[in-house]
Image 1 (cartoon, rainbow over the protein chains, first blue to last red):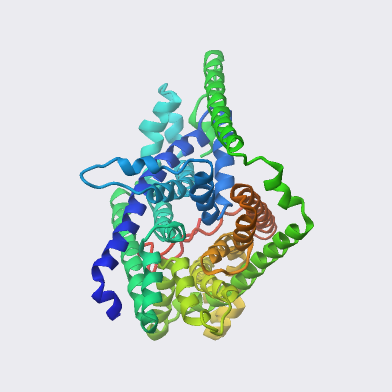
Image 2 (cartoon, helix red, strand yellow):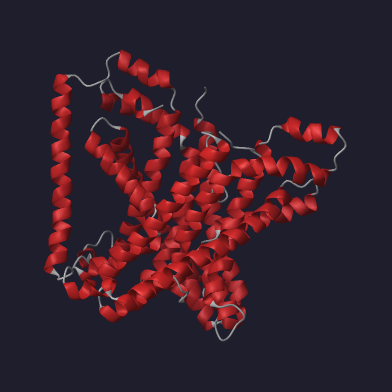
Length: 229
Length: 287
């Protein structure tokens, strides 16, 4: 463990990169996944078909292959996202590796967000949608005013599973040039082979802490938002 | 609620509007596919020399044996994970604190740690420099620990979902605690666990791909070899991805058949993922 404590700033830096990957792709996946879910339950057949095809394909593809397609394949056809390295916000700028990793994670996680939300929509009481239609609301208003607010509340549990999976999935970015926690652990272990158990435990604990923080706050949220039925 | 309840049956004007949306969406999708296809074409990704590898018998053999490796890793991992899951799932239900608590700790730990992190750790500890485990078994062990922990939750939820009266009746006719578990609760629980178990196989199969990072055999390793040799990263990635999807769809189909046969149309067990708070106390979360 000495290796970790004497390089503690590197340890923190690695986990802040993990958290950055998680936050950016988490927001991306929530937004894109919600759009997909509303396609999936919406009245336009083509969009319904597209969303369900997307979910089926992405859910059955390993995340690693999605990373390969976007981070290695993309670069081969000139989509390397180098341009983001010139954009600076408050003295901070993202690397092209970071953007490619976030895209892969977003593409993968959106499919699971979509599925979670759809099951949430299914759990909303039938009468709610019928009542909304009876007073003449069109589809968009039925969704935004009546169904989605209740679906979001019902879906906090399954959505937490998706988000927790995303936290752990950020580790795959280690294989594609990001020095986040998992890649940093590999470097630490390489340099201090005699301390590998301590190093592993320290990094594992880092992930456990992030996962538990997210899980417990979602549990609190779930209890607060619970719909009385 | 099915999607049909969310909107009225469209009238003539709405039908026209939906058709317009449909056409717009189609144009957008075709444009998207077109842009990607043009890009691929411009960078010469459709050239026969890059795809030739997938009609050459020698390379097909490489891919086929890689597919077998992937399946073998997944099968070993899932069989061992079932053993692990049953042991720790029952352990978590034990009446003894000193059994329950360590089981809880082990399950929570391995569910919260990324599989890749475990793989790298085991790789460095047991594999590198002539250790006892080959990368193949490093992948199997890591996947066993992770999927086993998930299955422990499935087992626990499945047993909890068996109506309490079953166990009470068994006690009433004088069965011992172990007998109640092995003769009454577990057999009934297993029926409910089966679909969740098979869908966990899809997860295990997908995760074997992570062996890429520790040079374990399997489809991703075949990708690495062929794309390095042929410099055809995109075609190889497409073929390998298609293989994964095909195998997983087959598994999912199997899961549906098994579920219909054994469980009827009941809902699959809903097991919260790693550390979903309060799952030690919340009991069965079963639909």
